[in-house]
Image (tube, rainbow, N blue to C red; front, top):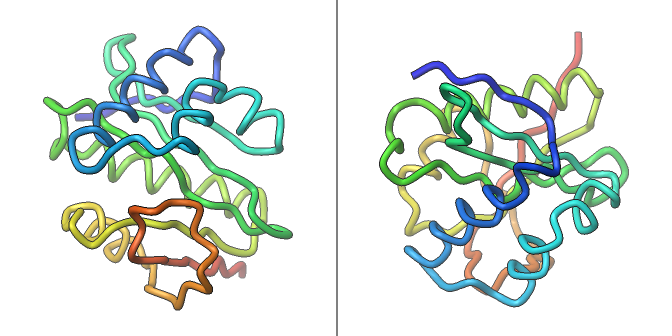
Length: 156
């Protein structure tokens, strides 16, 4: 399923909230930090130097993801969600590949992410694209996170 991936537009903010809320509620629970970011995505992500992207299929938002600045030239892949009934159709692959390409274009040093090993499909996806597990220094903003991964970006 081929989607188009577009940058943040305020009119899609509700989709950012709903898609992420749904998967968090399905697998875990929505933490106060999540609620703050989801309800105020422009202020909490865009206005702080981050990025939000939406995957569109036939003009419908079917997925989303964000990049949050964490350190000098290090961004966190964050809030990636795909509409439940469309999972497994390659949308997550397209979002991850888009993110990697975007970060390389911006010459970011690395992409990190926090996840949970119960999310087997997600962990498999990240490893497939070259993310490696790294030691967390207790710096995760999420109680549910039990794995930290990183992709160091190399330029030729």
